[in-house]
Length: 164
Image (cartoon, rainbow, N blue to C red; front, side, top):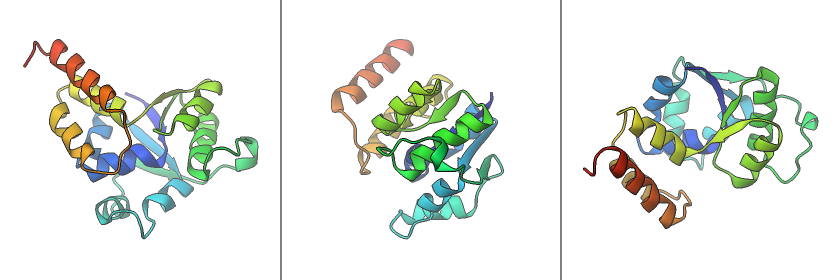
């Protein structure tokens, strides 16, 4: 277990499908920059997500947003830039992020990245979540994914668990 930094996406979708409680079982602490907390609290964010972040669990730590000038990546939104800058400043080696451009930028900075699907896969491997049910719930949101990726993930999980 260890500390990680999260961007908005994985927290948003895990809270939305009721699977956010896997995070403290996978990591000791999840840090978010203040700008990510604000994004999760935005009035257009689903109420379930806003309510979750308002009751912020003890394992979710909000840190001041680092100066975004230290990471001049104008193609990223403020949340992705701030999460990457925070991960670098805290010297964590893993960032939770879904955005492809953000993931590429994090990798270029020497960070490892895992998104919502990867987190669900890790949780399923540890028996913390029913992967098929979680993915079915995720399909009911506006989460963007390639259907063949979900099919492959489910097939891998079935193969690992003996075809059940």
